Length: 224
Figure 1 (cartoon, one colour):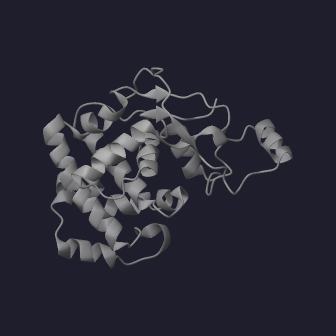
Figure 2: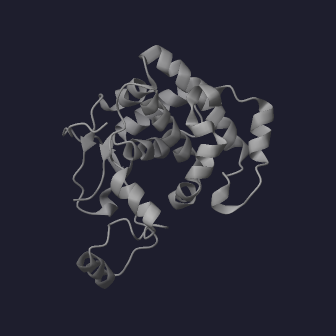
Figure 3: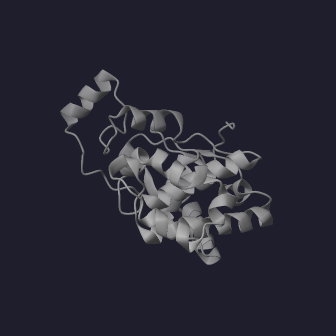
């Protein structure tokens, strides 16, 4: 799944606002000295599962033929949409619950969910990390998006080809010096959002689309 990283012309971007958990300059220097990661000021950033995700998945290209690639892309599309209004840590802690609830994110299976199945998911028992976010609009969007992913796959040959078309089929490696320089969206993300909304996808605003691009390695935004 790993591709050779290719530098591309930088798009117009809007900068990501600084996190409210900014540390003091002295603490920043201490973290550097301790060898801690740049994302540890984010909610959950110190946890092992969060570190594993950021170090081993975030920014690594999910690209290639086959259903497994499309399934992973659909999973991340669904999780990024679920994050709307919440922290990524909240969703990451619920990741296994999402996988159980949505049949491992098998696109065809989820696309066939009935209103009864949606109602069951809305009423899922449990709290915390053991259960998905019980928001009807978000759950319904996963099912609707699954159907639209199948349509896009039929048109483009795969969901992968459709989504990666917005970055020309190759990942872009940015070389930000500070995490404060990371954008919240780009021209490519806005183009993706516009087209996906036109097709009927839900929870695909420009910021969510850019988060998806970061999570599946269409862009690598790890500061250098």
